[in-house]
Amino acid sequence: MATAPDPILPANITENSELDRNAIERLSKTGLPHRLTACVLEDADLSRLMLEGWILEDCNVKQAKFTGAKLSGTVWKSCKGGLADFTGCDLSESRIEGCDFNNSNFRGATLTGAEIVRSKLTGANLSEAKTLNLTFTETRLADARLPGLSFRKARLNGLDFQMADLKKCDFRDAIFQDCSLRDANLVDCRFDGADLRGADLGGIRLLNAKQFKGATISRDQAGQLLAELGLKVR
Image (cartoon, rainbow, N blue to C red; front, side):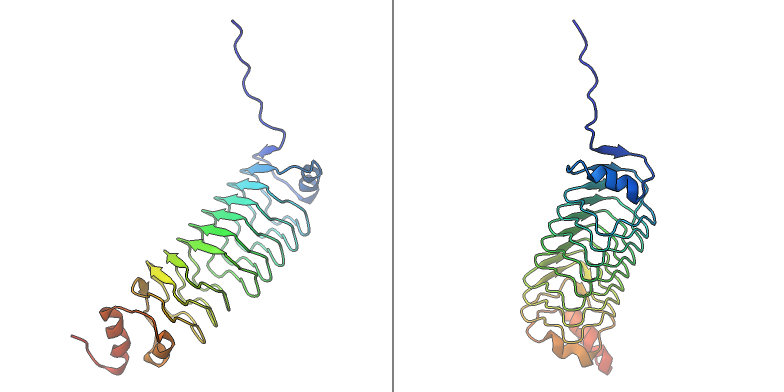
């Protein structure tokens, strides 16, 4: 009886390759989503390319330029993308999982319906991004710029906002679990109805406590705030 042949990888899979703009353009001309595994695109200029539905796994996209690119429905898994530039690109309905995008630029990007899970976005810039239904889970956002983002009614799990710029963010009715707001910029934030008992509020001055009006905090957190006045809660 004849042995079945080994399965042939689909033509839209590329592995362990160093790719530049010309190579990506050639792959995109098939009109089909492509899967890149362990590929190197460091410093590549991929601006304005149409790569909807592509999957990038274990890829190096450090300092790559995706300005204005069409990346809706893409999946990014375990990628390294420090200083990558996603300015003005379309990442709607995309998923970023286990990636390192420290100091990356998402300014003005469309992140509608996107999911960011177990990733590092320390120092990332999401200013002016379109973020309707954007969700973060177990993600480091320390020192990131997130002004004006809405987290209303969200369940925030494992998010590190330490020293982040959260000016004018909407946290109304949000539930914090294992999160940090330590030393974050909370100017003009809204916390009405929020449950902050699962958040580290270290570094928050009593002067800013009025911003938490309508929110729920723990006895220990109240003690931290009152300690600013030299008072002790027993």
